Length: 194
Image 1 (spheres, rainbow, N blue to C red):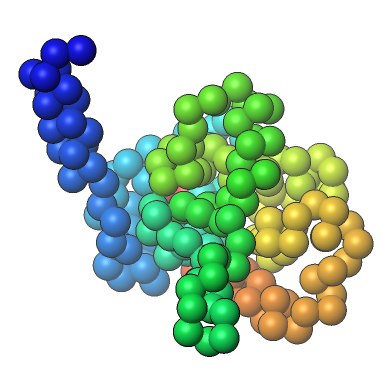
Image 2 (cartoon, one colour):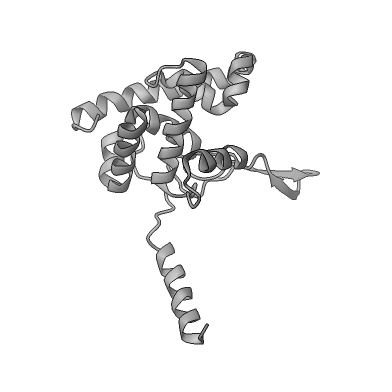
């Protein structure tokens, strides 16, 4: 490969990164404001709703909780002896905070080999796929924000075993996610994007 071609590809790669907005949207308490700021989110949520039947307000509430709409979100670091960085709490990454293994299952099942956890379209498609599995396997309605979130957080096996029932902090978080989902649902109706 010639030097010029290598330089071109390097510039292209660096330049394409500038199109990704790594900051959270402003006013995350307003669903319509989020979609106004990020039209690509609107398209991704709508497509996932059509393909998988996942309501937009449920997708948004879960994404807010998982990553605050930040594409390269990671779990906090662990520290050895309180000072030496020692990896991350889990492999969760991206908008949907999908774990490595679950993301690999999704890519294999969906045939989307090049899907990226930091791409909003891929992240929402993953969520729709996962929520459909929760409905099929656990009989959780797609519109039940609280239970969908609990199954999403604990995994299907964990939810089946009832692991969430022993975690009061998680039940409190799931209540907040459900409240946010209800708020988003009302807002989306007002701006005609439900």
